[in-house]
Length: 300
Image 1 (cartoon, helix red, strand yellow):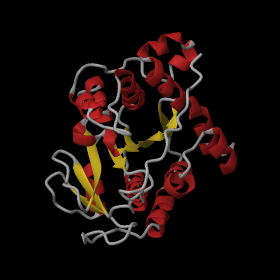
Image 2 (cartoon, rainbow, N blue to C red):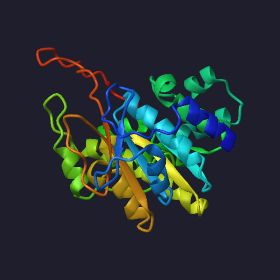
Image 3 (tube, one colour):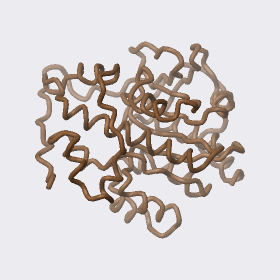
Image 4 (cartoon, rainbow, N blue to C red):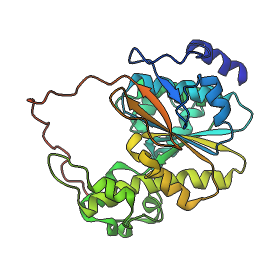
């Protein structure tokens, strides 16, 4: 396994040792919570003692996805067992993920049956291939999107109507109390509209489910650790998924790596900073927002 990981490190560019500011979309600069830039090998050594490493992302950013793969390769080369957990796959697809890792599915069938995100081949394929070739588990950590959409439409009470097997795809307990994460979420705007209480319940169903997935795995596998990939909003200010995990397992040592672009301030400690160049603007100020096309889910 270590020979394979070393080969992957060479293919990914070897041991990144400089701390120059990122210049292209494939570059990044990692800094520890004190703001000290670190080469990745040194950072991985410091992260070795963490029970959980959450790597936030700007979805589709090449530099961040490169960093995730390079960090995972280094963590897998360390003695302590590690599982990869991913927001990008939901619990109802765990059997499909396991089948692919076991060599029972080809990639095309895996992408179709796992409902992989559209950018799977460019963004997440390196992570799955590292896990597959090192025989490392991958946790489909998230709640299914169709259930989350129904929570957003009908509220958390919708979960009580689900059959037991489907109810298990979402966290047993949703954190709905008035807290800093809820305040942050309710302050967001989409098409000029503030979120509803039901929409917050949908949002935290993602966070609580990912947190519960990580917590359950570590309880079943003492001494192991987890690297979780997820959108950066889920760990901003140490809230969201990170906060929900700490509520479930206060004794875990959790490291949070938060990406920022050149025009953004670094996160406050204890978060690590991953500085990357900004992506091109999705649209200019005079260009209209896309229409809302989510439709109405079939909630039964």
